[in-house]
Amino acid sequence: MNRIAVYPGAFDPATKGHEDIINRSLHFVDRLIVAVAENTTKTSLFSLQERIELLNEIVGDDDRVEIRPFHGLLADFAHEMGAAIVVRGLRAVSDFEYEFQMALMNRKLRDDLETVFLVPARHLTFLSSSIVREVASLGGDVADLVHPTVLRALEGKFG
Image (cartoon, rainbow, N blue to C red; front, side, top):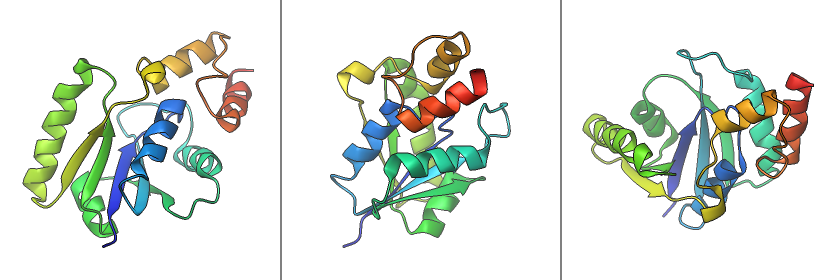
């Protein structure tokens, strides 16, 4: 059986928390598609192409992971990719309500699509892309929160 999962997100930028979810997902799926959302409601720090390139650098040559852009309904994208699993990270109770609603809607749209929630490593539970962007924009040290490639890209954006 070839278990394919989709891990969707904006990844603006990708953090060590995202890396943790990617790596732990590979313990129970054969192939993971990291679906980089084209965010039309917010202004992104990094373009869609930049986010894809950064994620490709992070995952390296692991042929079990594929980085793909997506827009539209996640249920449709998962179906196109042959995925039966959606992987989502939950950092706090505050994430749960939104993620639970999305999981139920995805199942309504495609009843064979399961959502698996992963809790990040304990030392990463506070971490979010928005916190990394804010701290980096104010000159704070985020070196232990992001991959070195992402750190260089942030330094390029903020000096």
